[in-house]
Image 1 (cartoon, helix red, strand yellow):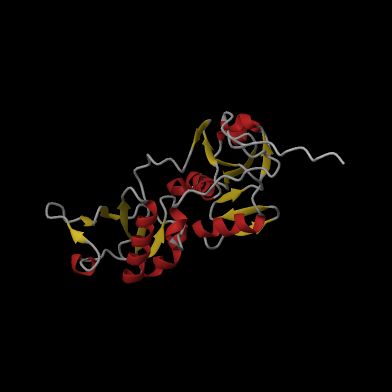
Image 2: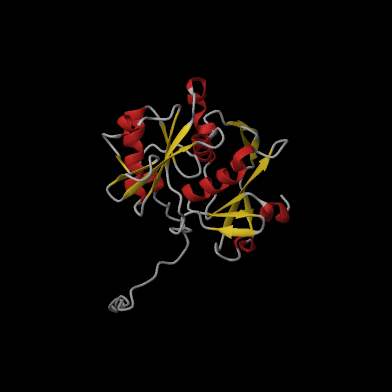
Length: 242
């Protein structure tokens, strides 16, 4: 694949070649109907190309070794930035970086203001939310749960991850959660989804099954990479001569 296409992206630049089965599983978290097409994966209106080995220049040297997974539109441009979100979500879950329009970003960057959400087919009432969230006195659409802030907003677009809600949806609504502890946010998202019959998703609209899904993945270290020796390490003594 041409280098310029990888740099244009959206591309997930990964520190190790992903297992094909695991890659399909992750894409299906964003689109449950995603399927294989040869070595590629087709999801809604995008094609997730099979991983290819790339130069470290792809990430500006951030990764010594990179495997590139490019997400390309099939036909018209995908709605709601699905292609970009898919590349970023894959990079996050596989410990990599995202490349789009020549810019490299780290999806695990703690400075991101967005967080997980719970998607509901109808807008919940304050009474339905009362057992889990406390309503803000000055804003009917803002709630809190301890240090966590929750905003009740209309869901823009129709994320493929929540297609099963659409036949019953009258006003697709997101409860967007904000806070410093992503794992804690994930636990609350799962609790809200269970109580309100919604679907919990991360900020890229991948489904989450456990709070730990919101924790950054550790980057894989090549097996032949030397381990750093402690500064005070003492070399083993030479064997005594016979």
